[in-house]
Amino acid sequence: MPRTVHIIGAGLAGLSAAVRLAAAGHHVVVHEATGFAGGRCRSYHDAAVGMTIDNGNHLLLSGNHAALEFLRTIGSAHRLIGPPAAEFPFLDLKSGARWILRLNEGRLPLWIFNSGRRVPGTQALNYLAMAPLLWPKPNETVGETIACKGPLYSGLVEPLLLAALNIDPPQGSAKLAGAVIRETLAAGGRACRPLIARDGLAPTMIEPAVEFLGKSGATVRLEHQLRAMRFDGGRVAALDFGDDSVALGEGDAVILAVPPYAAASLLPGLTVPTEFRAIVNAHFRIEPPPAQPPILGVLNSTTQWIFAFPGRLSVTVSAGDALLDTPREQLARSIWAEVAEAAALPAELAAALPPWQIVRERRATFAATPAQDQRRPDARTARRNLLLAGDWTNTGLPATIEGAIRSGNRAAALLSQMQP
Ligand SMILES: Cc1cc2nc3c(=O)[nH]c(=O)nc-3n(C[C@H](O)[C@H](O)[C@H](O)COP(=O)(O)OP(=O)(O)OC[C@H]3O[C@@H](n4cnc5c(N)ncnc54)[C@H](O)[C@@H]3O)c2cc1C
Image (cartoon, rainbow, N blue to C red; front, top):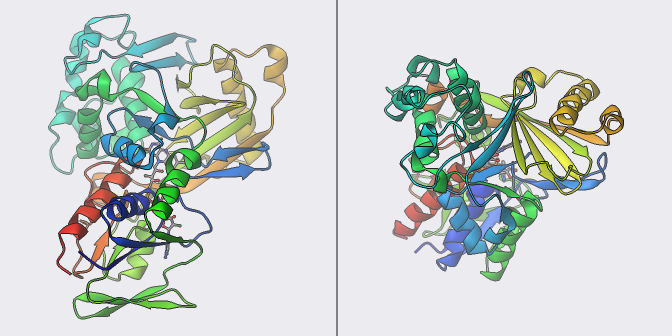
């Protein structure tokens, strides 16, 4: 068992590795560059809307078993809320049509035989057209594997893959799309119940993890950025934090759980994904109307999903790169018009733009193309006491919370098997 494990990066990959290792009795020190834990999954007080909000709306599904296990370990699984069944209300803003996609619990997709449960305008047989995604050819895109058109595509496949892969689906890796479909639609409604951290990402996923680590004897050092690693033969010998450095004992180990561009600069020669996609979130301070569902899928609009939180409606736009240069207020006004229509707000409320915030995460995830997917490294490195973690490592999933946590768990499992 290694003496001390240094984990670089307090995002969900680093925290999940830390929680596993601390629970197993290892001495763990987490080093985080910024002044907060959570990385791309964080909450902060926003002066413009006058409330604590998340950097972006994050959706989990009941089939995200590693994420749920992580939350159970840190004692906060009860903070995720969602409907009792896999139900997804949708609105087509162009036609005004509203419907609810309702999956049945089991793996046998009975819902596709029920016109009241499936996507309007589709027939059961249409769903067979998705099957090639379950057995994709290596390095093919979604666009090369299935026809990206028609009501089934625009009403289900496109919104699902856009959200999960964060890329315009035809360009996305069919392998990653297949992994998503296997773990969601093909696993049945039991795996597809939508879950959100109603009280915020930090109180649900991050603060309880940091508390768990504290109680387990681990240390989380904020504003402690790793500047360089010093190597001695086949191992990391020291960590250089600028003002201080840490010499590694013979049995000590390092898990590098930083974003890909940071990992590449700390570990020259490492191949990592180099292309990214943005996610844009718009937050509006307004009490959601009583009939507003917790999550609403919106089609034929800039808005893709509307999340209802206490005192706030928040919009997610995945693969939102085209919006990065739009002036902020213009974007807020155009998205607000869609939100007001989708929430069926009375005219006087719709006419007045409430306090708002636009959060644009430029490098929200790596671009889930086949070429970028091929650049994802395994957790093991050429250095015997150095492992990698992060949603961009080769998890077999797109960059998601579930992928980040699985990567942390894998690094922790490999490290537990290491001889000191
Ligand atoms: C707006 C947005 C919406 C999203 N929506 C969803 C969603 O709905 N569902 C979902 O499953 N996923 C979603 N994701 C993806 C999810 O947030 C990420 O997959 C996950 O948080 C990645 O965790 P990570 O630990 O791999 O990386 P990160 O969170 O990036 O953590 C890396 C950490 O390393 C730190 N660091 C960097 N360099 C150093 C250094 N030299 N020394 C020390 N520390 C360093 C960073 O500060 C950071 O804290 C979303 C992401 C964004 C941005």
